[in-house]
Amino acid sequence: MEEGVDVVALARDALSRDRLDKLALLISDYPLETWFGMPSDEFHIMLRSLQGSTVRLSPIIALMMRGFTALGDSSDVTSAPSTGIDVPTKEGFSFVRAGKARLAGDPVTAFQMMRGLRLVTEAVPRLIDPTRGQRAFVLLQSAISGMLAGRFVEALTLFEKASSGPIPGPLGFFRRDAHLRSAMIHALYGDDATARRHLEHASRESRTRSWVEEHLDADERLVLALLAPEGDTRSAFDDIATLPMSMMGEMWPFYLDGIYRLALRMGNRVEGRTRVKQLAATGLTTSPGTGYAGSIVGMILATDALLSGTPGLVRAELDGIDQRFWLVRLLNALHPSSTPAKSIRTARSLASQTRGLDEAEDLRLTVLAVAHSARGDVPSAADAAAARRGRRDSVSDSLLTVLAPDLMTTSGLATADDPVNRLESATPRLTPRELDVLTLVAEGLGRSEIAERLYLSVDTVKSHQRTLYRKLDVNRASAAILEARRLGLV
Image (cartoon, rainbow, N blue to C red; front, side, top):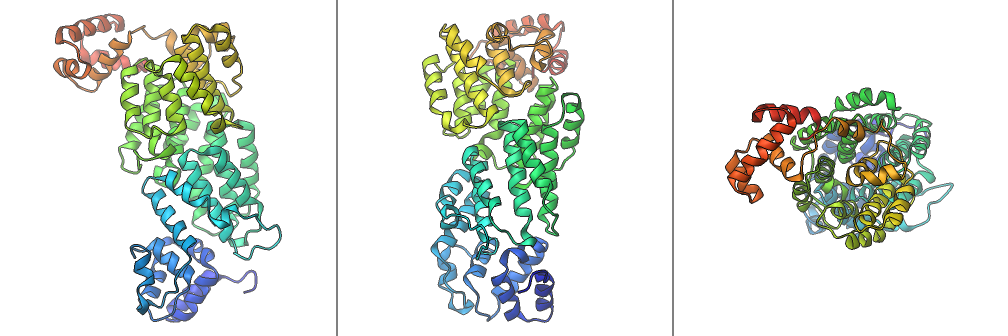
């Protein structure tokens, strides 16, 4: 078919004229152009019209039906001769099964299945791609699976590969997608300069008529907010706080991560934590699950507990999420129950996961610094802290400030303007147990419930309450909760 021909218009015309044979041919030859060129509901109607017809369907349409409709496992398709569906390739079904695993909350399995596919492992042609964008599509989906699994280094490689080959004009948003997702990874776990370069590349892509574009617009808003200058953090936070999470699609974990990080930069953890909890309660998330997507809510709340000095809550948040995920392993290594030697081994074993990503590497080095400091090896701790090279006001900066404040000072890394320092200077020094009690009071628990939860006597809980009330300069629970929220303690 000649370039510039409107495949979507032809497909709509074929359906309106009941020319299902022509419709099947168009979708078979241009599956991605038709799928992404019209609203999803309309495309589903076209597939359903073909499913109930006597037209012999191609393997690609069979795969689409497998992915978009409830046809069950592969035997449901291949054992139904009345549909006239050709038997699709084994690799095609593997791709569909991987996609379903990802949507079910298991991106780790999806990535393991996708990264071995032929279209992923083969070299990308430079001039003509006989797959008409299918190669780029499979590479993109593999990269997104890796991104959601938390395999950021590998995902970035696949995004680069997806954007490097020829892509049909109507599918030009594939390149924008690859660059925006790469920018998102770098804005959160890499470095700002690389994120901005990917944003610039994304902006050069001509806008298509696909419905995907408005979702990519939401991704771009998130990245721009994360890259906002220091003085614009509040307005950046407010901007993405009004962004419907439904617009983020599968990128919702990065949205929650961004919300909390911006709140931390403002010195207002409590606002970020509250917003994350509200969004997690909407049912739009798939947590718990595997990898980054299945662990992000627990990781955010565990990080917040570490920053507030409540190790008991850290363990509660981490226990229910993917213990194999490298970021979860690093947070576990920061928990007081992890011995310094074990934490050092963990951090050293994860170097491949953070390579080339400044902020992720800074978190790994923070674990090393804190662990060396805990075992009294000040020179090694100082070396690890000094090797950190990411942005200020980051999660790793905040964790090092709270967990090893002397190290931050002696290494010359702390400044009076750091958000955690601004917060800590005005925050009463509560013991970890007092913070545990305060957190449970804020959750509405009574003394007997708190005693049972913390394995304390009621009299001990009462004593902790009196002490923390005195430190907060209040005389009742409701006032303590208000003051604690103002200070960002709960």
